[in-house]
Structure formats: C-alpha cells, structure tokens
Length: 106
Image (cartoon, rainbow, N blue to C red; front, side, top):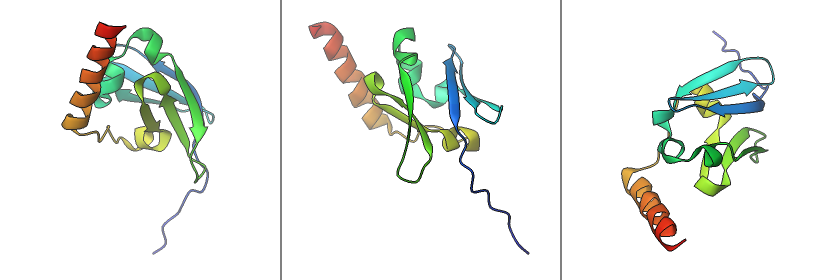
C-alpha cells in the first residue's frame, strides 16, 4: 500500500481575527478557521496587535504567521492540521505578567 505525499506548501494570503475565530485565507482559495481560544496570546491582544501580522517562510519553505508585538508564531500547517498552541501555562503567565508591567510603566 502506498501513501500519497503532498509536496506543495500552503501559502497564506490573508489573516482575519474576530473575538472568537482565527481565519486564514490560502493562495489556493481555501479558508481555514480555528477557535481563537486555541491561541491565548491572540485572544489577549488588542485589535491593533491582532492586525500586526506578517508571513515569512521557515527554513523548510513553510509559511509562518508572525505577530512581532505579541511574540507569536503560528505555522499555517498547524492551523490546517487543527493543532492549537502548545505554549505552556507557565510561559503564557510569564508573558502576561510582562505585558502588565509594560502597561504600568509605559
């Protein structure tokens, strides 16, 4: 038995975020939705922060969606595959504490 392998990487052309959903439009016309609760940093972000994304390719040619102000990276293939963020609670709480401190100081 053989298994088909797809060598074409999905290419991201647009990202939209609502209060409940992350939506990714791919070059081939597919639109992939994922619950925003899967990505806590995006859930905590302001609208301006959510809109501050860009796409770059990793060393294997895969599209990665990056929010610099949130220090958040989400591989397009992870959203397509249905894989939520794997960030630990400890890491997320450290990030949230740093954000609170930044708001208090700034």
